[in-house]
Amino acid sequence: MTPDALAAALSGVSGILVTPFDADDAIAPARLAPVVEGCVAAGIDALTVNGNTSEFYGLTYAEAERMQAEVPALVRGRAMVTAGVGRSVAEACALARRAAADGADAVMVHQPPDPFVAPRGVVAYVARVAEAAGLPVVLYLRNDGIGLPAIEALTRIPGVVAVKWAMPNLMVLAQAMRRAAAGVGFICGLAEPWAPPMTALGARGFTSGLINVAPERSAAIRDALRAGDYAAANAAIAAIGGFEALRSEEQNGANVAVVKAALILAGVEVGAARPPAAWPLPPGSAAALRDLMAGWGKLARQH
Image (cartoon, rainbow, N blue to C red; front, side, top):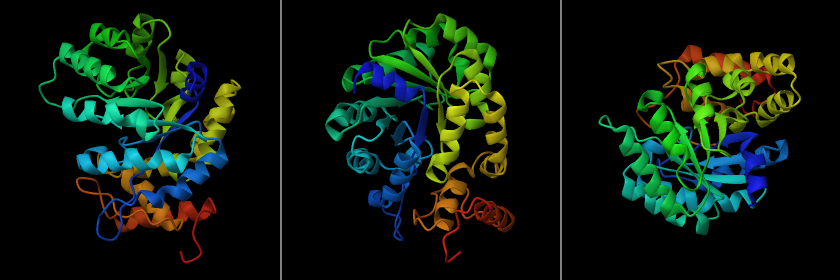
C-alpha cells in the first residue's frame, strides 16, 4: 500500500474486528467472512485484527498468530489491514516480523499494560517493535500519563505514521498534536461518539467496533465529518447512542459482549466473549439489544 493510500485509509473508519469462537471456545476465523463482506460493501477503510474489540488480551499467542495469518485472506486487499501486536516485547516483535508476510499493511502497537511502565520504557518497547515490523506503525495510546515528552518521542520513532488516541483529554491531545513529528497523523481511538470533537481539533478518522454489526452507520458518520456536516454526524451518533450505552455497562466490560451478542442476533455465530468480559448479557440488557437490533432491521429470521 502506498503512503498516500495508507494515510487515506487511516483518515477514514478503522474497524476493529471481533474474534469468533466456536462451540468449544476455539477460534474460528472463517466465521468473520460475513462481517468482512459487510464492511467492504459499506466502504469501511481499514480493518484491524487483534485489537481490543478482538479480545486481544483474551487470546493466546498462538491464537493471535493464527488470526493475523488468516484474516487478510478474507479481506483480499479490499480494505487496509492492520495487525495489532503487543504483550511481551518478544511476542510483539514476533508478530510484527511476520505481519507483512501474513498480508497486513501496517501494525498497531498496543500500549503496554504493565503496572510498572516507565515512559522511556514505552519508547524503547515501540522502537523495538517498529524495527522488527518493517511496516508502517500505528501507536495505540490509552494512557497519557506517560507524559508529553514520551508521546512526542514515540511519534519520532522511524516507521510511526499515526497515533490512535484513546483518551478523552482533548487539551492533552491538542498539545500532543502540536509536538508530534511532522507527517504523523492522529486518529480518534474512542469510536464514533468522540469523533466530532477530535476531528475539530485536527484528528482524522476514528476507530469503530460498530462496524461488525452496522458498518453503514459508521461510514455515514465518516462521510458527514469529511463534509464538515457536524449536525448530520451528531444526529447519526445519537442514533447509535443506545448501542454504545449498552457497551459501556459493567465498567465497559460489556464492550465486546454487546457486539458479539448483536452479531449472534443477526445470525452470525461468533461465540461468547471470554472472561473477564461480561457474558452473557443480563436479561434487561439482552432485551434492550434485541429491540435495538429489531429497530435497525438487523435481526435474523430465527430471532
